[in-house]
Length: 284
Image (cartoon, rainbow, N blue to C red; front, side, top):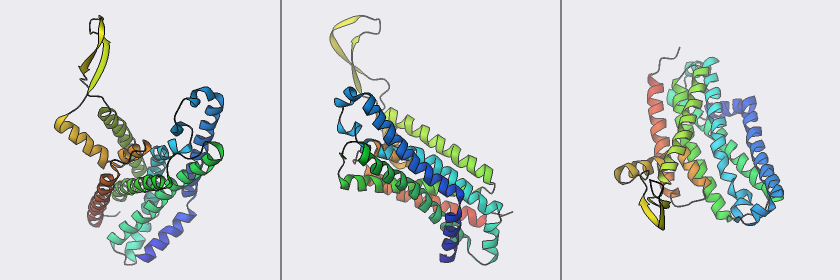
């Protein structure tokens, strides 16, 4: 399989789209830094009363993953779709490579590319942010832990993308499917997070009829979810890769351990299912 991996990396380094995605990742980090710097210069009185997380690059460095996922999806769809359109996969089989070797070598190179996009964004954002913005408020250990958490989530996300891209022979269809899947996961993340962030109770001074209460009234929030339904939402929030990205953007370490476990499970399941389907697939 080492020969397959070497050949894939040789093709990766020649890929124009791979280089475009790297430029996009670095450019996005620089853009966010300069946007925050310009906003601070324009509204110093507003930022004066805000916490350090609003002034340093640390506050938004991990939010870039929610944009990088689209570059990752497009890359996987195009890179693996080209394998089919150019007849590369058929040639690999003709010279004796096993299908599971082809599948795993493609996953490895796609994972390397996607983590590269993520790391380029993080390093660029922190580097430029160090020059333009306030000093870092996260410790070095926290930055490393959050980065590793997002790399684990990216591995799970890549495994899902490779699963679909390897069983769809059309480059156009595979790319569109990967992007649609990403959009669905992003919207699912926003919806699940919004539901979980609902407070169980809220305080109001106005009744349903418009009457003003003398004292604030505490009421049960009808939008709050509890019981089994909440457990399902919490499971999805910790298990789905894009939800994991979103949790890290809030700099919370509470669920990092369980998220890593779910990422590992997703990688094994997605790769296992993908290999089984790919081994039985009739390649045209």
